[in-house]
Image (cartoon, rainbow, N blue to C red; front, side, top):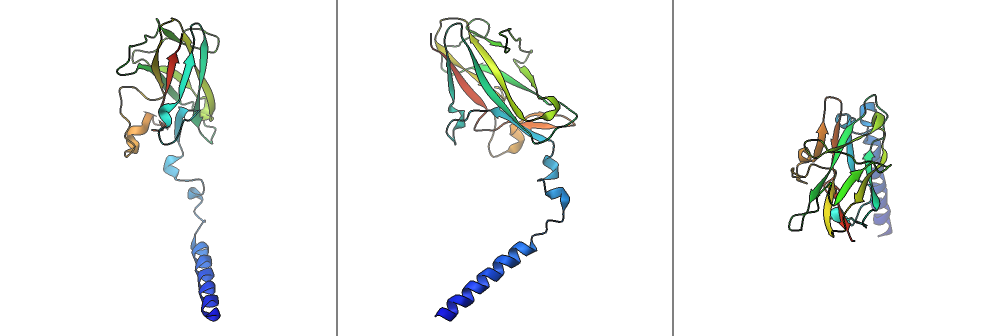
Length: 192
């Protein structure tokens, strides 16, 4: 029996070495991942809730206060281009609507009001595609209580976790930025 176990152990060890020796690392283009993804980046909220279901993060803010909501751009490179993404605010279905410009404002880090484009988008630039964190700032204006969403993905589009093409936030000739289905919105609640 001992001889059988020794033979089985040696055979297992030999198979283990054959498997790893057969792995060919001579293809330099594969050492850093799939070359077709070299200019694909990810943009999402920095603080995650529970996974799955990471869209359950909530921030609270009081009248005349400003909160900062960190967003992250995932990149391991420095490029010649500077990707631009957008973030949005949206009402929550079934709740009394809080109105941007009346109940809250989107502001910069100095408190200056930011104006969205015609699609409701607030641009955010990532210089030279360097990864990192930038904040979104929300100022509560009214004492009206309620909630709304801040999104890193257009609120009128649907993200399907089974189709990676639906996660694309922006795609240009130089780069693509994708959202993450478990972390593309947070809820902001004005409490007083």
